[in-house]
Length: 255
Length: 137
Image (cartoon, rainbow over all chains, first blue to last red; front, top):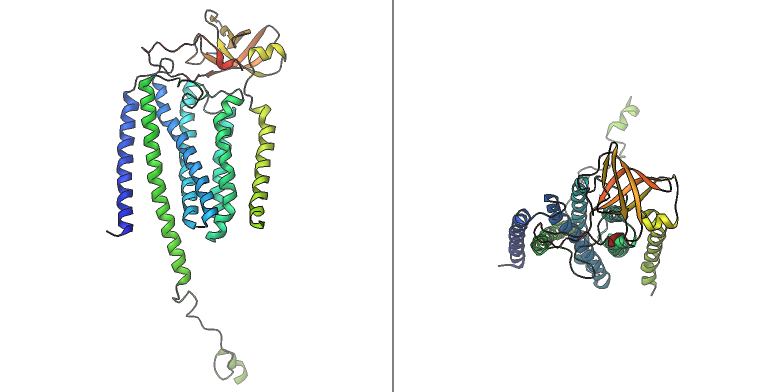
């Protein structure tokens, strides 16, 4: 088997494992007991928390890959950074949407400008800006270098978002698991949540693997297009002749 | 060395912008004040948000809404809320109220539920709304 086929087979397996994990997480989320206060509304937790944690993971991967690019100057690291940020923005958007759907019945509002929601919205738009910045530069090397700064600095928002609920009085509840002291969640609910986190991260890994592959093909196409000596559009057109003996320009002189 | 400066200078500027933004946002990022903060620096007749835990045994339904007290574990504030309370409103739950303070009663017209970080099963018996520590900042 050639290396590309091995890689593709590995990727397909990753996709199958991710799909099974999501199915398992979904079943656990439905079977887990309801929360004493929120009842069934608490099931949104099993999607909301995994999506935001996956977005954190994605942006950390972007930062690490960007640093690896700056050290090694290999464009494959830059492609990983871009792919991870793109998938991360999708998961962050899902986290915001699921949070809104949960917020309406529990808090009473879809959205409010408390510290957690404001900093999360800021993070969403800054990473959209990172993707926008990349689209504005066509040269792969210049794109990698110029977007590296934002790719690294933007990760500083993760602690700001995470600790926003501790630093400022916020409507959003403080962390349940990633906190000093015991997790504030009963075991059956915790199991469903942890399986959900694992499943969403597998889906992330699969999506990033697909996205990196696409980026690699795009880069290969671009290289081939530049190297190719094939005729380009316009080759068939010859420049106008200035020869006085033939052509339309002699008509006036003949009469 | 020059290469590194070309990275460090824009990165430093970007960090500086983020820091300035956050310092300036800081006051507006505080979503509500606690009863202790209201008592320490009372602002009368201005719209503000007050957060606290509903004190058990103080909830009374009235014609135009509901009356109760909120606490952060140290100070209790009497609240008169106009309108229907939220679905999850109950004794011991956290609420954030929007309205005005006249020196004696907080007149609220908007109620949001501040759910805490505990997730408990119905038979787990571990959920303990007794300590309003999330409001004791």
